[in-house]
Every structure is written in structure tokens, then in C-alpha cells.
Amino acid sequence: MGTPACGVAQDPLPDADPSDMGAKDIKKGSSNGLGLTFRRDGRFIVVGGRIDEFADYGPLLLAEPPLKLVLRDVRDINSHGLRRWIQFIGKWGLKTIEFHECPAVFVEMANLIGDLVSPNGNMKRIKSVLVPVQCIPCDKMGTRIVQVTDVIYHSETSAEVAMLPCTRCQTPVESLVALDDFFWFSQLTD
Ligand SMILES: [Zn+2]
Image (cartoon, rainbow, N blue to C red; front, side, top):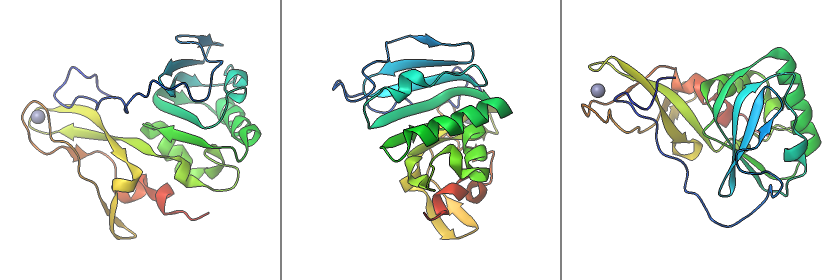
């Protein structure tokens, strides 16, 4: 998506907590294979890069639950990577794991393949997502962090979320995705 330099800047990080819960083996700035990087940020682990066949989830599997993954820097998921990720989720099993700031590439795939999130259909593991948005007057694109619990459903096919306006011109931003489709996962029951 767009860079934070544009008027529709990306929202800030979730609140960092200095407590050292979980994932003690993840070193700050450590790189992992060719495709994926893991970086500690307080009690979160920021996952970045490509979910591909080179991704090694060994360090994450050694972590203590709860595992809180921030996925905003995930750029791409290929088909081999998808299989490996699902294997990782299966191995993690029913221990607590949370997904924060999930980008569209992850959300759209999770809507199709629930195993991406949970081996038993627990889609509540997705805590927040990045909704692609644009400011029409500024002709800029960006994202907005939306907590899944903040989505309001008027009906099964009509969803609404409050999003911060454009930081440059204060015009309300327009979602680039159909919100009822994008948040489909949140309506799936276990
Ligand atoms: Zn604007």
C-alpha cells in the first residue's frame, strides 16, 4: 500500500508493552531465511516480507504463548508459503495466538482458507486489520487500522467502521474494499 508520507498515513503501532511475554527466543531484528523476518516489538512480534517456501517458523514455535503477531509488513503469500504457514498454524495448535494489523493480502486469503488462522475455525484470532483506503481530493492511498470488534453490522451484507479522516485535508477516507466482504471472517462461527 501507499507510504506513510502521503496524506493517508498508516496508523501507529498497537501500544507496546514493556513486559516480556512470550517469544523470548525472538531476537530484535533477527532475520529468518530468505522470505520472512521476525522482529520483537515489546510483547508483539512483527512479521515481515514474503510468506514463501523459505519461511522457517521454528523460532515462533519455540515461543511461549500467547503469541502476538503483527502482520502489517507481510507483502506477499505464495502457494508454497501458504502450505508452510498452514503447517505452522497446525503445529501451534490451540495455544493462544493473535494476529494484529493484518494486511489485505492476509485477510483476503483468510476469508477463503480458515486454516490460515486456526486449525479449528477460531477466526477471533484476528484482532485487527489494515483496511486499504484512499483520499479522493488528495489522490492518495493508504491504510487504516481497524479493530475487528469495532465493525458495526447493519446486516450480513452491510458493515460499517469508523476510520480516521485524511490527515492532510481531513476529508473522510473511502475504503477500497467492500467492508462486508473484507470482514467476512469475523462473521464465521467456530
Ligand atoms: Zn486528503
